[in-house]
Length: 106
Image (cartoon, rainbow, N blue to C red):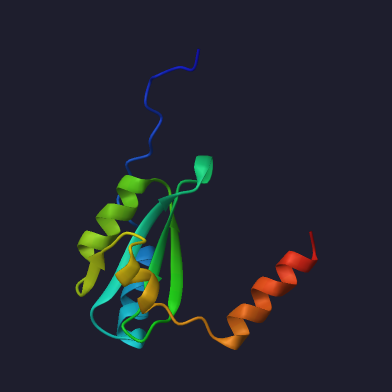
């Protein structure tokens, strides 16, 4: 059976992570939304959705660190992938091309 002992990294967000999230909010509008997603052993991904629909992300060591990041950044609201958040995203042609190229490489 798997060990139930927690191995979570409960680190505070770094200055660089905070700066990246703050810069995203400044560039893409207030309020912006943030969805914290676990990405396995690598930690968590904080997906940022700007008021203009732009997407961005910041990778952190754990979901707890991601939640702390969202709390620490003014005008960044916690969110989930509900209809409101999904409908707020705007995926432009450049992003679609990048996604298509990564699929072709498989």
